[in-house]
Each structure stands twice: as C-alpha cells, then as structure tokens.
Image 1 (cartoon, rainbow over the protein chains, first blue to last red):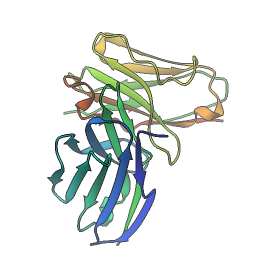
Image 2 (cartoon, each protein chain N blue to C red):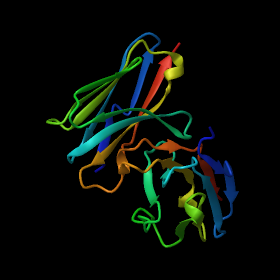
Image 3 (tube, one colour):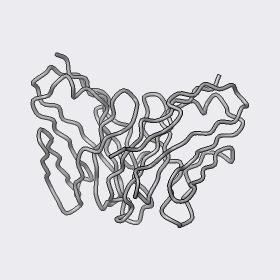
Length: 111
Length: 116
C-alpha cells in the first residue's frame, strides 16, 4: 500500500471548529510535508516537519510527528470556509528517490 | 515572480492520438517533476529531472509515455496513442533541487486531459 496514507478520507465540519487529519507511513523518513489542493488543480506547500522535530506551527496550522508510530497529524484551528480543500501528506523516505504523496483528505468547512 | 505554468489547461483528444503537455518551471529551479492525478485520487509520480543528470523515469506507466527537458528549463510530457485510462490531471512541479527531495515543490495548475 501507499507510503503515506491519510485518514479520514473525508471530513466535514462547521466553520470555527478544528479539523484534524492524520497521515501514516511505513518506512523511516527524512521529513514529512503537508500540501493543500483546491479544486483538483495545483498543490500548495503548507509546512515541512523534519524527522527530528515533534511539532511545528504555522499560523492556524499545527503539525505533529511521531516517528515511533510513523504518523503525523495536521490540525487546522478555527476553520474557515476557505479552508475547504484536499490535504495531502508527502514523505521523503530515507534512501528514497522521491516524495511519495498519500491519497489525501477532503476537508469541507461549512459556513 | 512567475510560478510554474502549464499548457494547455485542458486538452480533449480522441483515443489513439498523441498529445504533448508543456511545463514551464520557476526560473532557477533545477528539479522538475511530473505527476498524474486521477479523479479523487492521490498523486502518481511519473518522472523526475534534476539538472543534467539522467531523469528518473521509473514512474512512467508504459512506453507510450515520454518526457524531455530542454536546456534544463521547459519540459514536455508526450503521450502517444492515448487511451481512455490516460484521462487525468497532469501536474508539473519544480523545486530548487539543492536539497534533493527535501525541497518544497511548487506546482503548476495542471493540464486536465480527457481522452474520448
């Protein structure tokens, strides 16, 4: 199966609520990145967390990384309708030759 | 500055025809990637160019697919004898390439290919 797998596949919340998406992977990594995609077009880089980091913040985004469990989570606080998009994790595996993207979580924030 | 651009934005073709998709990376970026994304799915890696090194073609699904990058800048992805299963969004990304796959990738808007 995929190196990076997100769950849930789809998440629907109300504006103002927090959204949490998870990513699990199988092999040891150098870093893990989160990307956002609107309307099936280009992806936009959100945040990168290195394997020796446990938590990172950027605005309303908080990313955690647990290398012992090979998992990461992306938390979006105080969500807005404009946060509606698909969110992908991408792993840079040690000894790997490319970033591997997961299947994504489709987030819908209802106004 | 300008981001990654791709053309055309949409392409409709008939089964069996050849298509060419173009990607203009960000100036100065030495790494260039092509991905394919089927509806509602994740990104499927196709090919990776890094500077003057031989490209990593390991993701190309068949010999109908090929890509080149001229002068270390513009890249063209060619699909010969298109099949209906080739219908997807083709995404191009570029990165500085200085730190390999750690670098942030900057994506173009994609080309939506529909094979009838």
